[in-house]
Amino acid sequence: MDELSPSQWVTRCAERLHDRWHTVEPAQLEEVAMELWRDSHLRALPPAEAAALWLSPVACQQS
Image (tube, rainbow, N blue to C red; front, side, top):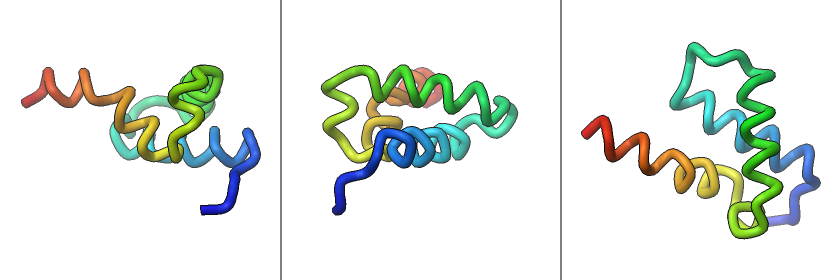
């Protein structure tokens, strides 16, 4: 995978978050994605993986 710019990473992460939260405004999801990007551990992951990891506690609660 080519290295993504910060804006590309945030956009892709926000898209993945939107897959989970359809009712949340896209601008809010981009803010969340930006917070995830600021975490060096999550930023090192592909955006979809970072979003999935961050969402994993939510997914576990709904099982």
